[in-house]
Length: 391
Image (cartoon, rainbow, N blue to C red; front, side, top):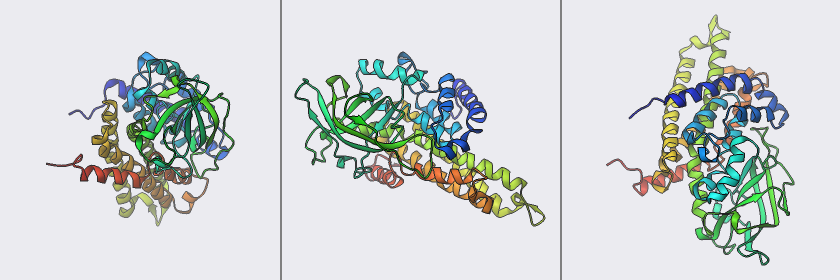
């Protein structure tokens, strides 16, 4: 058992930490204020080779895997959850392609993500089918004009990067639209320029401003047989893709918690009250200590989950461990950002300090890619099924 990062991973962490301080930190508040896509963040990630961390070397990436991406996301999210989301989007839409795509699909779509010449987004949720994935209504019917082709109709929502993406991983029902059977759902690659595809609206979000989130509308969008990911009826692919993402989302939670706690600790160390600094009070020290413990616990859970995912261990029996990381780290982000606001008092509630931004951004993490309640259900099911058991 080795708790040390390899030399390569330590070097990655150190270089991303410097990039985060130099490039991300100075711009984070402006990006949140304007909501404009931070192309300079993307360019910095591209130049540093961070867009291909989780992509295998044979497809233009660095092969650092989910562990490498987790480390990078933790570092940049200390200052900007938008930056963390941008790196996350190199894995979420490409995950199904890497897990079940053909060699030709991998060669066609992965190198562009790695070198920054293309972006992608992930279409699973719908207005009536968020946690209830099987309730999706987007439909894929066989194209009468193309053998093995499909026509997609429906609307995907809450899609991060919807207007920045050059291609999309989209899930649709290829079976009975009223069916909740897992073999009725299939994944497709849809290119942005395909006729019938549009992005008519973006959402006005409470936080994580800077990467558009909105709707993808599909109206008789034709996709060929070469754009089917895996098998027709491959709903399990959606779950495998999401399972493998748990540590990556957890890394955003850890980074946010670290950033919030570091800022608040510096503030209370300098803020004078009652003839001393706020940090001299035992009650304040205890709150700082409890969060520090939780951050370290979350990191251990998350790094283990990332290691499991890189071993291909994201099938049912490993779900409790992956879900624990996502649940604990994202709920921790909410607690840490809340405490940071409280430690700064009235000042923490004002836009003069980034604490209010962390507070808004943290809430997103407990919802996306499986809510905290979904994670608790998955963990409980693992215990009940003895996938997680102690004798």
